Length: 114
Image (tube, rainbow, N blue to C red):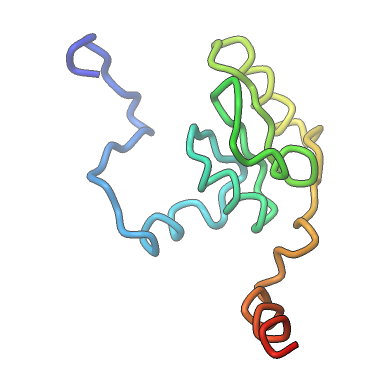
């Protein structure tokens, strides 16, 4: 941002990288998340938070087909359009995918026992 002379607005706070828990605490109650992170696409789907992925592709397609995520690309117009839909509550509700119930270890143990 410095190289391009970009100054963030007063309501944008820049910070150093955070631990997972501190990061989770920042967005767990968010109205919407804008990201290019695959991990955040999954986390927002698990929590039911609308997610705008600012990329042309994703390695987490289930977050789009079942979850709360959408690929919006990187254009200003597309990002603002998607944000407007979230803000107007016209965003898909999505759902937590079938096996995203926190019980993977229990299923693994049952398979190993069998």
